[in-house]
Length: 241
Ligand code: F6R
Image (spheres, rainbow, N blue to C red):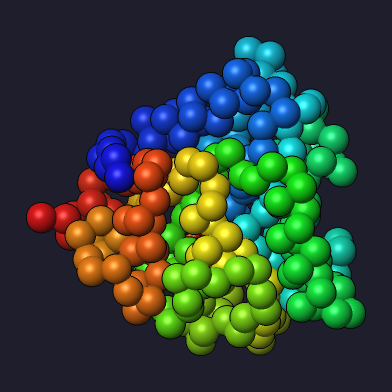
């Protein structure tokens, strides 16, 4: 695990560099896309590089980490819509080349199995962007999630619903269920790039880097992965020894 402690601007550049290097070398690369607020500056930077430096996503494929259950297709917080708005429709990336778990499917377990199959058929994810929750969750794998878990339906914890309420008009509007890639699924991506900023992430970053591997802190599963880049600012790194 490589840990880089730097200012936000530099972290954004490093994450964008990793994506750019991959996509320029392999135009049909498969990117794993995270939502939440942390990766948004990275998407802005990739859009800038597309507009000013000709970085192209025309051949790339993308897979989202997770999705809320039950949000309508045009709901502003539906993750697939967020990803469209933040990157896909601002660059030359055909919408149909970017998939998310289908939170509107009638048969949700079946939708999860299909999603796993789509990732496998694409040849797996080359580079997965990740954030981390204050409780150590990765995607929507909350504490207690199996380290070998696959894409499945989960209930959101009260804490995560509270954390995400800022994106909704009212806390009650935050969905109760989600679909999420499992920790086993995420661990199969060839390169994991995790970003964390702010003091509230310090305990989770400490566990991620120095804690015992445990479902109590789901992000600790990354310690088992051969190629992880952790990009953190001083505040998020403040708990490290
Ligand atoms: C988003 C996701 C979540 C976030 C995490 C941190 O797709 O899977 O695990 O990465 O909740 O969110 P922010 O970046 O908003 O602090």
